Image (cartoon, rainbow, N blue to C red; front, side, top):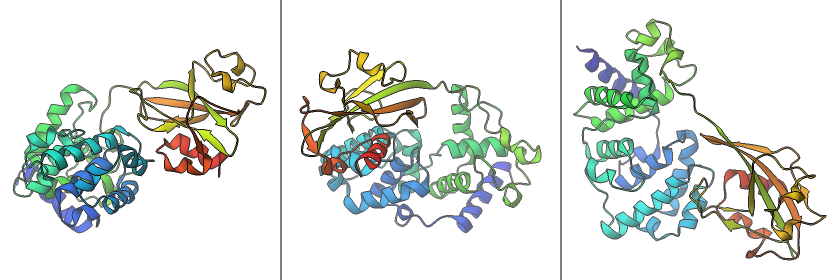
Length: 348
């Protein structure tokens, strides 16, 4: 038996005995598989499962999802992060419902043409739903393959992508591509975890290069360090008469696009009570003696490539040039986790 066959057989054997009972595995229906794959991009299964259940309960089919407003989709998505996924989810639903009679593409190539569907998602859907031989390659797969075969190519280099894709497709069980793909993803998520993998009870430990050389923590190799950008957000929270305030929608192509927030002024460094009134970019309605800082120390909101240092300035005022809303209605709007945290702290 070749090393490739051994690997494929063992992975699927492990999967048959250890796979989780997850709702999108019950029928392999394309709409549900696609929805689960989009939700689980950048999201752990334990966290994403509740969102999947909410979406499928609210939108049992692609037609109902397509008919919903983007704002409603974003609201249901709230807390998952990477909101471009939700916007593309809605775009794809509209495309499939209105231009494809509600039927998802059946080939890898056509699936790739859908908004928000990349090689990994197209491989997952085409193999699980349509039994097409396309191997998935995600963070779990990189980790499992690099450890088992002792691959030292840094996974953050461009040339490594082709190397891992070729190996993944060589290992793929062409007779059961969907089962194999789910097996290796599940193995990486549950057994060959990023930290403290259970190597002692691993079905592959006798042949795993990383295990045999005691270098499990060294894999997968990475060469580049992510440069983190620091940004300083100053939210100006208007307190209007009759328990009203104002939110505005983020229109620019930036994080949290189309979500709602309080009027925002970004600065090069944290503002203090002493220097905030000197900021000429602050709106006139905010510049009063009653303006005060809610959180003396900025809240740090960590994203993949940037850290947001957020300060919330409370501004009692008679009027603002934005549409006012009742504070009781704030929870109706899709907002970032950062704004949601403030709403719970200040208005609850």
